[in-house]
Amino acid sequence: MMRDFIFKVLPNREKFGHEKLAYTDLKKIEDVVMKSLEIDNMNKLRDKFEGVAFIEKFTQKVVGIMALEKKFKINYINWETLNPGDYQPQILVSGIEVDIITCPYGNFPIINRKSNRPAIIFIKQDKRDVWICGFADTKVLNDNTSDKYLSGALMRERDNQTAFIGFDKLKSFESLQDLENLLT
Image: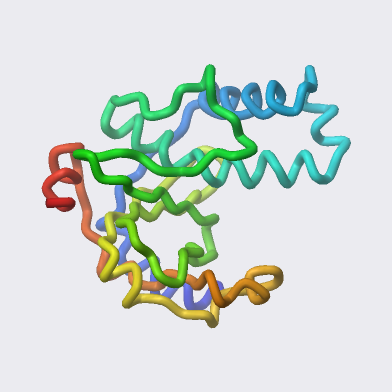
C-alpha cells in the first residue's frame, strides 16, 4: 500500500496546503477527551487500550478542522460543548455541509461508497503536521475510489465504504472565499 501511496499521493503534494498544529492544540484534544471520559490525567487513558484507540480516532477526525481553523483564522470547533464520542467532522460553508476526511500518512482516506456531500481531504503527516490536500465535489469523490486499499474491519463494511484515490483531481484553495467559489 505504501508504494501506491507514494505513486498516487506524493506527486500531488506541491498543490497541498500545510498547517502545523501547536502543542496547545494537541492539549485541547487531550483535555476534551479526558473530560468526556471523566478521567483526570492522560496516564489513566493510556492504561486502557480502548482509551488510546478512542483518542487516536477522535484526533484523526478533528485535526483537519483544526488545520482549517489555522488557515482561515476562523473557529469551527466549540471546545466547551464538543462531545468526542459523537463528533462528526463537518463544516458549513455558504450553507453547504462539507465533510472533513483525514487519513494518516501512508493510507488512503476512507469515504462513503456513495458520497452525497463534498469533502476536503487531509493527511495527518505526523503528530502535528497536517496536509490540506484539497476539495472534492461529490462527482470526484464517487468517481475516484478503490476497494483495494480497504483492510481489516473495513473489508467487512465494503458495502458502505471505499478508499479515495483521486488526489490528482482535488482542487486547491487558499482562502475561505476560494472554497466558497469551489462550492458554487
